[in-house]
Each structure stands twice: as structure tokens, then as C-alpha cells.
Image (cartoon, rainbow, N blue to C red; front, side):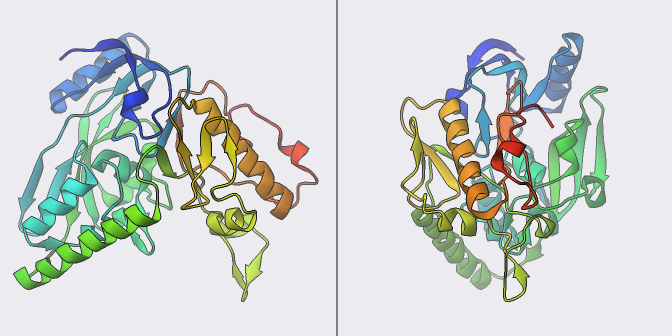
Length: 326
């Protein structure tokens, strides 16, 4: 397996920004995945495992370590249980399951990403989470290169959260428990899949974005309530400040389709995106006294480039100006 050096990452993420990877490889099986980790240990390199690049922003300085893009693309079905390797795209996973009369995962139709990245962040659509269907997985230890099988509880899944955030283990494959369906039900759900994908593509930008840039707030982070319910949706606050399609910094702009989605134009830099995100944070704080935090994964930044969370108890935005890593 070839490990390449000084490889551009601009064409490997949706923002189309960012610098180079010092080392880069695409392991095609479990053994090669283990070999890449041994290489990183021997050279004392930081590791970033790259999926389809749909939920990340890479520093303009690139990544001074090893970027691993798993080229593990097998899918296996046994009864109502489906196992997919980390490099399988969510689109292919859904199509494969429906073609084999298995249902459940079509709820995530139109969401970009791979199985590895989707399990990492526990993708969700309204009340559905990918973790609702996952029963077990294979993970590989960063330091020992050992592969083990774990159950769902091992992941400590939450909203945009899993144990994989610790970066001590990486996903090799995931196993999902689905339901068998009749041909008539499958025909209906394939139509639903196509319609949901069409709606998402019409409602949201489909390129040069990471999707939702900021996560929703937790209930304890907000004061605003309507009908006695805490308003946690970040889009509510961003819509209220009127930035949709209006706010730009450099060649990065807030999408006209969604106030929580940043889109880049040709020639944009990751610094443009960061500076725009900071401006969005500042405007939300000035209007509501809270600071949004990213859902987008920030890769390769030496220091934390955004403003850290402060609640409505902060006296001024200047209280939050701490740009060191948390």
C-alpha cells in the first residue's frame, strides 16, 4: 500500500478549501488499515480519518500528520442484519438495503457521508438517529492496531456525539438491525427515498458546504422559551438576525437556502469560512447573549479558531475572546 506525501486536500472535502496532508493513504482492507496505523506510530504522527469530507473544514495550513481515507467498501447481509465497512457511502448503504428488501435506513436519504463518518457523528434526521439501528461494530485501536468487536453501548452515542470523538479508536465496519419488507413496501419506500433526496437538494446547498455549520444548543444553554419550551434550534437564532443570503466574508457566504449553512465560492479559503463563522457567532451573541458552537469538524488548526461557548450570563462579547484550544 502506497503512503503518499504532500497531498492536496482541497478536492477531498466539500468546502473545497484547505492545505495539504503531510502523509496520505487509502487502505483497501483491514490489514492495510493496521499497517497505516503502525506507520503513524513509528513516525509519531497525528491521524485524521477522512470520509467523503462533507462535515469538515480543513485548515489552510493542511494537516501535519497522516490522513487515512478508508477504501473499505464491502456490504454483507445475513437475514435482517446488514454490515457495511467504513468507506461505504450512506447513499449506497440505503440503496443496497432497499434492493435487498430491508428498511429503516432510508430515513437518512439525501444526507451525504460515509458509514465511518456517519457513525462518528451519529447522523440524525428529526427524531431518527443512526444509532437507533446500529447493534455492533468493528473498531481499530490507534496505538495497538488491534481490531475488536463492540456493541452499541460502547459508543456512548449522543446528539452529534460518540466515543469515536476521543480519537483512540476508528471505525472499521458497522452492523445494523433492519426490518424485512414486502416488494410493495419497498416500492413505496424507494419513492419516499427519492422524494426526500429531491427535497433536501432543493432546500439545502449540495456542494461547497459542510452542511449545518453550528450544532443546536442544549436546553441548559438557552434562556429563550416559547410556550414554555426552550428554543434550542440554532437556525431560529440565525434566521432572526437576518443573515441568510446576505452575510459574506471574503468568498464565503451564508447560504440563501439555510441560515446555518456556509457556502464557498471559487478561490475561497478556510480562513474566509472561519472569519464568517466568527461574525455569525458575534451577531448571535449580541442579539441573544449566547454563542453557537460548531457541528462541523475543524481539522488541522493549531489553535481553536472560533469563540468558545458563553451563556447569557456573560456581560459582553469581549469576555469570550479566548482562542486557545479548550
